[in-house]
Amino acid sequence: MPSPLILMKDGRDEPPLFITHGLGGYAGELEMLIEQFGSRRPVYCLQWRGLDGSEEPDNDFHEMARYFADAIVTACPGGPYLLAGLSIGGLPMLEVARILLGHGKQVALLALMDAYPHSKYWPLSSKFDVTWARIKWKVRQTTELPLRESVPFAYGFMSKFVRRFLSRLRGVEIIHTEDNDVSAELKKLRLAAVAAYFQYRPRYYPGKIVFLSARVRTVFPNNPRNVWRRLTPELEILSLPCHHVAMIREEAKLAAQALELAIRKAVEGCRRNEQPRTQAQGSYPLESSAIL
Image 1 (cartoon, rainbow, N blue to C red):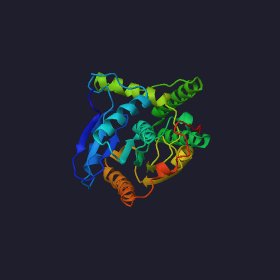
Image 2 (cartoon, one colour):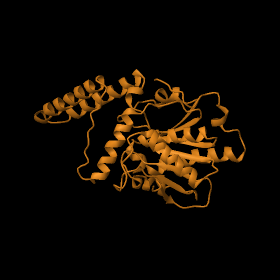
Image 3 (tube, rainbow, N blue to C red):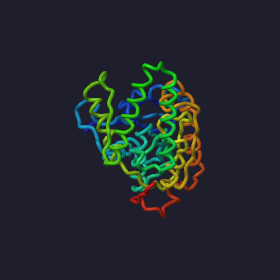
């Protein structure tokens, strides 16, 4: 079985950072972010299965997490571990962290970069905020169009809105793919990831989560704390003045600086031989879950 690990940046500092990409589906989407790291720390990207067509892609984040955890421990048996995940890639990395803790390993850092579970696990206030924000955005777009274009634009938006609303009432998901310009393997990988995302139920993580939050909202809640506060005993939010995609593109330097700050604090904590929070919270069962 091929390893998911891709060395994206070499270095001498320990421990290395293990990070995975988002729905883009390939490690290269993190290249601009990783180029901005100023430290000499090695950075490994975890590539999801299926990109080269030699394996079936994972449609279950727990399976993906076990695949990742095995590779991480093989590469770095002793720990401590620095883990990060972009967007929905943060969800399998959350499960990786739970697996490592379950085997007595030390997780020094779990950083989620604008990562959210499916909206069916959001509190009602977050669902309302996002729905209302999208409606206002579409209304603003409509008013900026000529009349002959605004009517069909508004009709198309309302039709999609109603279809999506009804589909979620039935417990299914409408999957939109605009991947005509990508390989069949990548399209299949993305579809499998969306299926995994829809069926994944977040579970309690008995350690600290550092959350890198894009301040310019598009389809995510205004306050990530409302979504994550019941899933962790401690949530540190690092707010970035950009939108979601810009975190790995034009504002990659900001995101890299925030991530390096979190890494530095985590590593310094380990060097001071502090009792890690992930072990101090041992009264929480790893298999517990929370309904938001």
